[in-house]
Length: 500
Image (cartoon, rainbow, N blue to C red; front, side, top):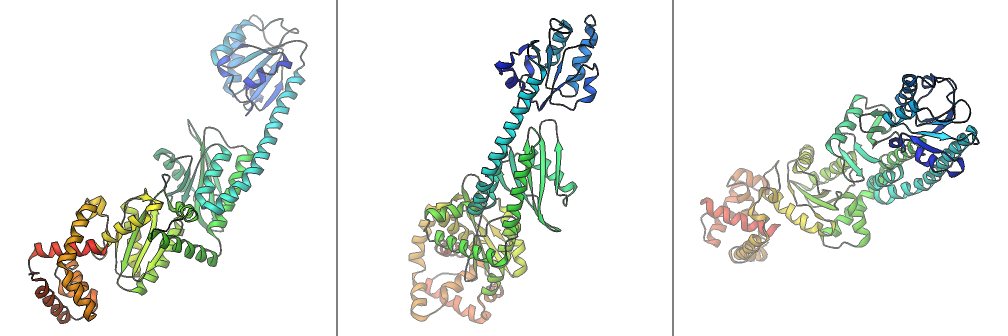
């Protein structure tokens, strides 16, 4: 923006500041000349008023003060007072009032025509607008590339840089998807949500508060709303800023409403990247892709779901992909048998994962586990912990062993339990290997069901009598009494530590 300070720095105009230095950083957008005492009635703010004071009473300090006050009240940027015609010098009443209201007042020498000042201001504003347009033409390709490479998060970062204000993308449920620069505070989020909820179908809205201007644009196609893009700054957006927001909205709509086959292909590719990361194969390109799912600190969390059947898991994978897309999340979902692994942000809480479990419950009986937040290079560690949590959860439950401070969340404890596994469970491992048996699997199902024969037999898909026979054989081979609660607890911890 062009300021009064810039105007005072134009030496060829020979302007001298006489009062109101506190307002030198006021923005100005035009220069007008007038000799009316009631000039303020014809202004709308941002103007430099050029006058010779022809209609002012040189002896009426009160009238001079009112003249300055009225100009300040409508948001005038400055007063340029021409000397050598009506007045040989600027009246003291004007100078005192300009200092009082912080409205810059500068003296214009007789040799400098007002038109020279007007032309200088208009030329500067035109040059700035031209520079902004050039900047916008450069920003648009960057935004397009960012949307292609990094998705909505990269696009939001580029838009924030281009408009110089905070940008927040909300999904259809009014939850933040991407923010830049940094994270928005709770007050900013609530202000944006209030605007959106007042008229969700509106194409755009602007709200001015005491310390900020909020601009909201709907992201949608036809009657369907995918989300809302919010911009928060200290001043309203100019034409170029609004143009860039329009470009961003178009890119977001294309991203969200891309053809189904493209979304499927991208999802499959990201699922393969997740599978490689689970096996600790994370290359530079894979890291860039995984960062799409990360929080601002570059962390992700693994969430694992286990279904009763492979068919349920297949349905669950499609349902989870749809839910991630609805929330503007990249679809990092991988299925192995009846197990489903997904990536969520590192700053997502257990309530987010529990909500996903509730949605997946519609596809069949499912349990879930949540891993800790880790850098994308350590996805495998979060998956391992999430699997352990999932194995410890009951049907319809999602656990986070780290949050619960479970013993199984400790690497040291798990090492001890694995040593115990090698010693105590070895007879079952050897028997199953030699006889294609299911003793170890049956013992784990029985222990996870807390000794409930019906639930354990159902989970295994066998008759109760078959399960009873297997458990009796286990007791004989391990020389234990599974009616003892402590024995059951020790064996369950040992088996879970190995299955993670």
